[in-house]
Image (cartoon, rainbow, N blue to C red; front, side):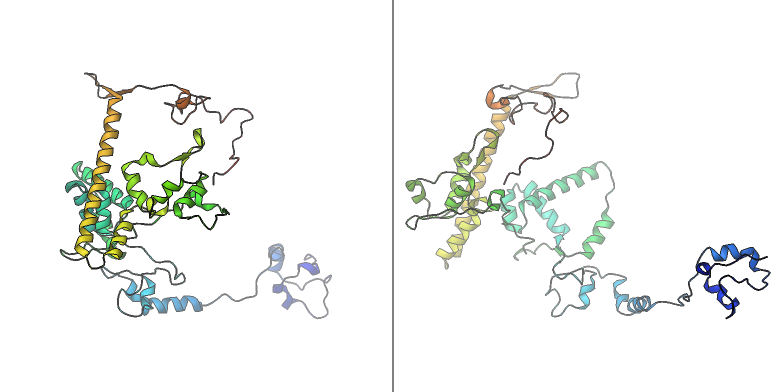
Length: 389
C-alpha cells in the first residue's frame, strides 16, 4: 500500500496526479514507479522556473563592446596609455590628465621617471658631484625621490656586477603603458616631474588656538609658530630685525642651533618655524622676491640665485665634515689580523642627562638591549594613554 501524503509536503510534481475530489488524506492511484522514489521526491522542493537559454543581456553587450570599441584595447600602443577614458577624451592629444577609471574622474595616474631621466639624475649626483638640492631644482624632482633613484641605480649596478638577471622586459613594458616624464633635449627647458616645494603638515598645527593680539603689535608667521609651540613671544628688537620670514632660512642654515627649544627632558621639542623655513627649497622664496624686485634683470637674478645655492652647499658640506670629524674623534677602530670584522669602540658617558632617572633615556647607549623591557610586567599599562598633538 503506498504511503499517505500530508498536505504540507505535496510538491508541484504530484499535482497532475491528484483529482479534484481527492484530499490530503486520500491515497494516490497505482503508480508503480512512485513507490520507490516517493521518499526522495517528497523530501525536497523543485523550482518551476525554466533555466536561462543562451547569454544574458549584459553578457551579450559585453561581447559586442569587446568586438567593436574594445578591440583597440587588446594590444596597447607603445608610448601611450591603455586607459578606457581615452575614448571619451576631447581636445588635442595630451590636453587632459590620464584617468584610468571612468567612474572616478578625481583620480589620475601620476607619471614615472623615464629611463633617460633616471640615468641623468644618477650622473649628476654621483659623477658630476652635484648636491641633491641643485639637481632637484634643475630637473624638478623631489629630493627624496632623487635619493631613492641613486640607491636603486647603485643596486642595479651591483646586481649586474654579480651577474644577477634584471627584469628589463617587465620594466620596458611598464614604461610603455604608463605616462612618463622624458628628459629634455639639449638647450630645452626640463619639464618638472612633480612639485618639489610641498610642505608636509606639522602635528603642532593640527590644534586650534585662540590667541588675542593687540592691534599695536605686528603678528606674523614667526610669532604664530611660537604660539603653536607654546614658546614665549620674541623680544621687540629681535622681531624688528626680521623683515620677512624667509630671512630666517639663511640664519638657520648657517647655525642650526639657533632654533630654540621648549620643554624639558623627553618632552623637549624645537620651536615651530614658519613655512618659508620648513619647505624643502627655501631659497626659491628668495628667488621669487628677487624677480619681483628686479623684473627686468633676469641675468642678475639668476647669478644671485646661483651664488646663493653655492653658498648653501658649501655651508652644508662644511657642517657634514665637522660632524664626521667629531664622530671619528670619539670612535676607536680595532682591526684584528685574523678577523674579518672591525670593532668600533666608542667612549660613553653615563649621567642623568644621558641615561635618565630610570636608566631608559633616549640618549643612553644600548637602552633597548641593556635594560629589560616592561611590557610583560604585571599591572603595566600597554595601551596609549594620550596622543601628542
